[in-house]
Length: 270
Ligand SMILES: C[S@@+](CC[C@H](N)C(=O)[O-])C[C@H]1O[C@@H](n2cnc3c(N)ncnc32)[C@H](O)[C@@H]1O
Image (cartoon, rainbow, N blue to C red; front, top):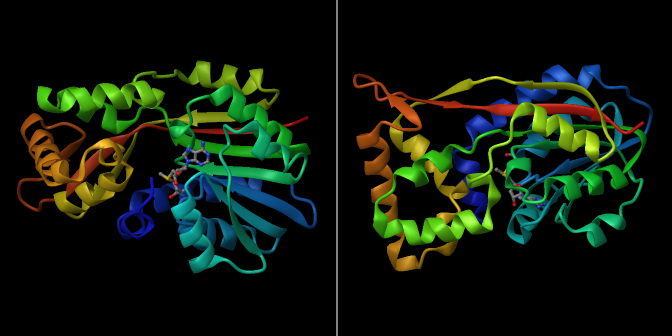
C-alpha cells in the first residue's frame, strides 16, 4: 500500500472500525503513568492521530505509529507528527528491526493490518519482544479478505496476475479459524484475554465510494503494468455488479452495503 492521499479519502470503514474497537477495549486495559504505545500498521496516520490519540492522550507519554510502507510513514510524519506522536518505518516481520525496540512499549494496537502479514507467528514473537512485561496488545484485522472473493471471479485474462498475488500474499489463500488465531497468539507467548469476531456491515453512500475504498488496498495495482490499470478498474466494477459479490446495492438509492468479518484479539504478555 503506497497511496496515502488516495487511501485517506475513502477510509470511513477503517475509521469507524478503529473508533468502535478503541471505545470498547481501552477502558478494559490496565494503565500506568507515562506509557509508550505503538500503533502497528498505522498507514497514513489519520487513525493514529484522530482516533487512537484522543482516547489515549491523558494516559500516555508517547504514541508511535509504524508501518512498513515508506510513503505512508512520510505522509503520517508530515501531516500528524508532533512531540507526542512519532511515525517510523518498521516491518513487523523483520526481527532485526524489531529488536531495536525490545521491551519498549506498554501497549501495542493494530487496526486492519495483521491480515496483510505473511508470517504471523514470527510477527507476534516480534511484538512480544517489543512489549514490556505486563504489556497488552489489541490486534484487530480481517479474518477473511473480501478481495479474495473478487479475485476468484475475475476473467481468465487476469488470473495470471492473481496467481502471482496468491503466491506473494497468503491472506488471499489461507483462511484461519478463530481457534487457529488464538493458538497462534498463545504460541507466541501471549495470554489471550478476549477474542471476538462477528460479521459487520458498512453502508457506503454509493457504489463509487465503495470502489474508491477498495482500490488503494487492492494489491493488483502494484503488480499490473500501468497501461492495464483502467481496464482492470472497469473489470472490477463490472464483475462486482454482474456477479453480485462483496456488496448489495440498493437499486433505488444506490446505497452499497458491504459485509465483512473482523476479528479482535486482546492479549497480555505476563
Ligand atoms: C489497511 S492499512 C490500515 C491503516 C490503519 N491502521 C487504518 O486502520 O486505517 C494496512 C497497513 O498495514 C501496513 N503493513 C502491512 N504489512 C505490514 C508489516 N509487515 N509491517 C508493518 N506494517 C505493515 C500496510 O503498509 C498498510 O499501511
